[in-house]
Image (cartoon, rainbow, N blue to C red):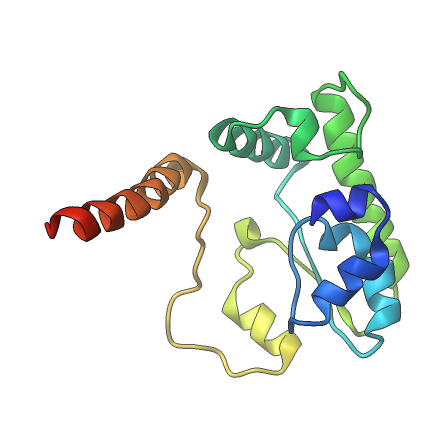
Length: 166
């Protein structure tokens, strides 16, 4: 999807997003204006990290585990050869631009799971009942490597079972 965004193919991206009830991550987070125009009655949630440093460290770990260099992780958003300061500045500027764009509107909320936001905040905002289950957090940084390892093992197990019956 990021390739479509990078090449400016917004019509194709918007065609894809029409198939779903919600969108998250890149490139969708960068298309908040286009999505707001396309879906004027939609609700938007800006999820942030506790600090730019924490966001950057998470980005680095994610890129390393995925086998990507930093320039591919946030393609086209910072210049080639950019450092930590540039990435954090891009992140903070993006968050502020989103806040400014939605300022004073009731279809926008900002949440940070690290600050304790969870089911209560998100369900109240969306007008949904609060589940009894604990709020899921599928990406706690210390367990990220384990998640990728387990995810990689699943297809291998399936192949072993298919061809050996074990």
